[in-house]
Length: 162
Image (cartoon, rainbow, N blue to C red; front, side):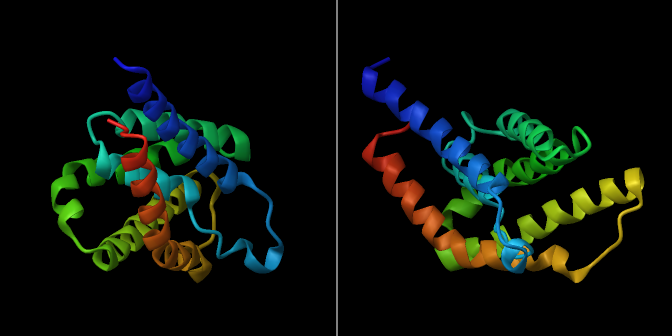
């Protein structure tokens, strides 16, 4: 293994850690409901680009980390991330061939699915109440997917992440 290949792998992990950092970064109450799911977007990209290297286990580990950092019930986001990334890995060849605008629509559906799984688990555990604001992150993630995809693809190609 060359130094550049090892350096590229660290780049992928660095982008996931940045996604985790952006996910827990405090925001004003006005925009908090619209917070895109940065970590999930980054995980979806890497699972689509390199599904044999970054897959369900990666999503589970980062889901547990997010649960710990948010002080949420342990395993809820790990389960939701794992289910979403399972779908991505299952259909990665098809998703890769979609134009970016279609990928954005699929990503919005996946983010909605993620939030529904988290809501369902919190409803069972704590009796959470449903609100349409649950889907606001899916809309903001839809709008940001194009940029996340382009930036991560450029980084992946520049550093030859394999």
